[in-house]
Length: 586
Image 1 (cartoon, rainbow, N blue to C red):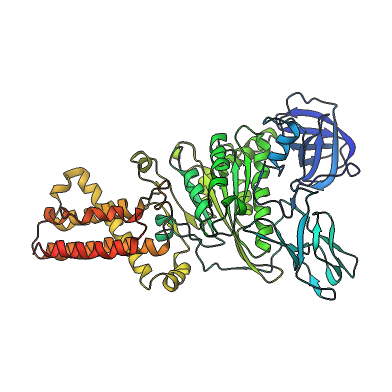
Image 2: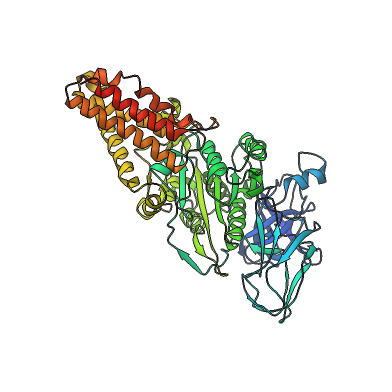
């Protein structure tokens, strides 16, 4: 959150009433979405309703002890984030206050109310390297220089979107703080490394394009069956304990993105603690550098004030858009949008608004749409191409996918990864139900897989889907009459489907090799199971009993492909062994 200067804050209102995080004030000279400081302690809040002389404010901190007649101060500015070098490897709360700085300020892990700090270090010196010279013309959004923000990320210093641009009259390299001028234009505009941007307003872009490249996640069921595009949107709904957070952790660790923004929105503190402890120890598979060097964490856990959940999603997407404008591919993980919606519901109820379905506000769908629509693959205003992919976890009570947040999310996103409690209970992870999940990006991403993996990628995937669909139909019969009552060809289909489930769809997030599976390896595992399928049905047609086909020694080796480092040689050897053992039977 950008810090208002003392001069810009003016006392011009008093508290009329307090109802949890919602405070009303009289006599306040403010506009919608202006940031205000409430009470003697200066608690940060935001104007959400104005009616006559009465202004309604949602406060981003605990309001116990705050009472009527205490002052309210308006900044006259909307809720903004500080943008500039220093956001990578940072941990913020929901309104972009750096938690490590606040802990140092308070000398305690428990933060006092009213404490504040800039989103980025305003004093730290950064090494600035110009990319333009005196006399060059620059426009809004153009890059004027670079800063080595981390060992992984080169931070590009851009002309702010609200600048007109012009001819560069002064620029030099050297060490500067983010508030010092690094370039001057002939129209008097001074460019610094620091920008501010309102969180509820999307940053401008030249064009939103159809995404054609997948966000490779390293998770077989996602890349192989239900891919998401770079610049795409996905939802992961599931009940408690089904693996939403672990799936998002895996995506944050392994997804083929330059930048990861992880927003912990109202989830339990121990889950965020795990992220904070694990990520600094992880190596980036792309560069070998620490993963945190390209990660920004926003920790707004369930014990933090409910109103701050409403802003943390916007804080995250604004930071993501800023790095998109530099030409980076950004992956935003929101865990979870249900807690965000619950915060809106609580604020709405305290405003006494007419409730919609299950008490959620009538504008729930509109707010979700506004958030997810900020994702996309863009040509930026400076001609770069960048993307923001948004992956939102949804936590429906009791795993009921018919509840409003899940249903409204489904109408917006194009990829649906449905987590299943039954699969989780059977220890099948990722517990993504392949019968309920879908991706609307398959057709536009298939050309990429054909070009970069194999020509028959789509055909192999369709074969796997057909086998799993047939298994789903056969399971109803099996539950009635038992597996042995089926014809031998259907018994063999069930066996093939079992290997698809165990060797292909299951993946061990905690195994050092199996935790990440490249598209080439994903394809290789599928072709190995397909090869077993073809040879097994040839043996069955030759009169070999299905029990003998199932009993060959090579078949169980299919389940061990995922943990093999030298998987290519292993698959070739396994295919040959399967063929040899089956052909010996006839």
